[in-house]
Image 1 (spheres, rainbow, N blue to C red):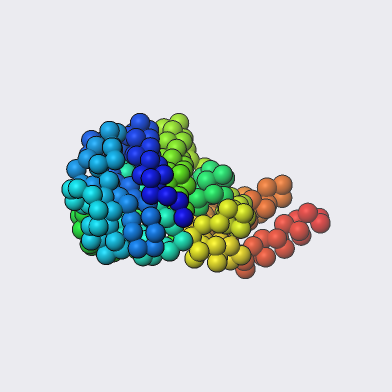
Image 2 (image 1 turned 90 degrees about the vertical axis):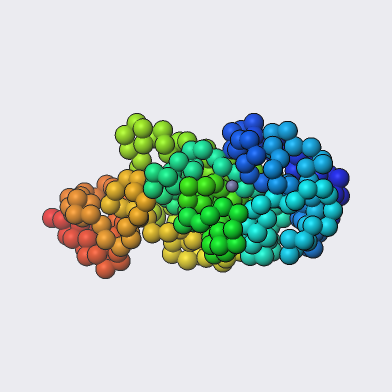
Length: 288
Ligand SMILES: [Zn+2]
């Protein structure tokens, strides 16, 4: 068990870091960490995270009742409690408003996509929870199914919730998400976002879940055909509505018929029956 004094120092340090790294401004955001199975240390409502001090921290129980400290617990307390309820394996929750990631939700561009190999390996994809009013039980209930399966999620027009076995790991997930958003946005500005080949994405994710772990429900899917990844978007680049990977666009089918060098990558997007037919066709062509 980590001493409360050390966790109080840590939550102050990571609150300052969130502000310095532009993950939140003014009175935005809130952080919490488990002191024990029944006690949670969290930031109080209406305090500036960039200048957070020990008096800005309160201790609550698992129902949200204040046990120690002055002031009220964060207005997003229900969100934090929902995370701890759904994920007994985690010990820290960080809620911030990272600007580029939030801009993706406003633009309607999904971050549940496989773009950067190392992010797929360590974090997987970042889903977006549909809009609900901030600080409400409705919002807390909406995030439940998402935090069950993910360590980083976005809330439409609002912010991010990042989970971890420690404040450091929750902060790493936040940084990784916002950095991915910056790289993806830059690629979009340059003209195109090329997604990872779906087969490679599944292999990476499976490897990452076994090597680094993740939500227990995701780890349980490590050997599933697509691991815990959503269907890949094969028809466009950057829409918010990924198309299932079973149907390849006509241009890809045509390419599969006339090439053999890039066959593996191209076939990653077609279904098994179609793949078998294409392989037979290419083998016939190569035999001529
Ligand atoms: Zn918020």
